[in-house]
Length: 332
Image (tube, rainbow, N blue to C red; front, side):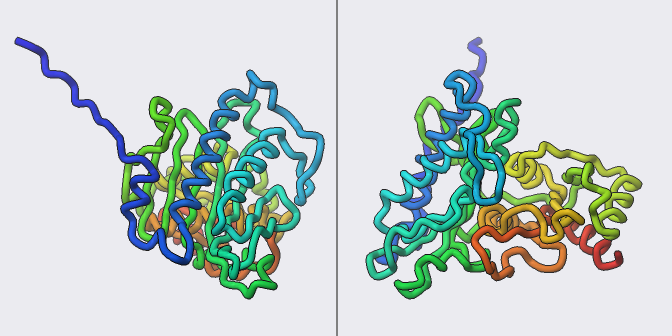
């Protein structure tokens, strides 16, 4: 008797094919699917450089600082250049904003076809590269709703206005998690095909999970409410999980449930994470998956940005877990 062969799951729906089937992404007002595939193209190149970083000797500092005053890693610079190159080839991209650039790169006006603004953190968690921890790219896409002479300010829109957002995780596999405003889908880079393939649609974050993710080394600088929440979590049997790479921590939270916290501190009372490049895109994905994304005092996606590199506190994750933190903040 011949033994039954195990079922082989063939994932042959590529990112491009899947986006082609989504309504409204291609129109006379620009090709959103094309913008996303340009981000994915850059991500494939970044993934290769991350994997070969030690072989090609591109680890370590680049020798200069970004606009936030942080020392840039060599891979920060390379990733930034790759994303700018791929997106600047598109005739419907009006503006590119990067965490690594002081000013937005204005490519064209709306009257010249510049329909979209793309904002990104090219390589979040890059300081972890030399110890082989998962890192990622975070991006958000907005429509250019400004008059031609004001294109440079087009990036300053609340996160709720995003038409797409997502992240790429460069870890044990390369994952693209994406929302175009109607749920969250996940793709994996298939090395045999050289393309992202669809592996899951309609991702939903669990409503509750006793996991919190925060750097407790900064606890002495947290407000009373956050510290009282941590006391509650310790007493309540919560597990602590913290990688120190936002994309890795957020992805675990999305899949497993729990809450990710980056509170304000006495040293950074306005928070540490960037609203436009990190908090808003991640908040968009988490909300589309059924979770909550808060600053601790309001919805992240409703914050009206005043500056390109504005920072914010971040509190995101499972609905019940975020609400639990907020109750402690209100009481504290």
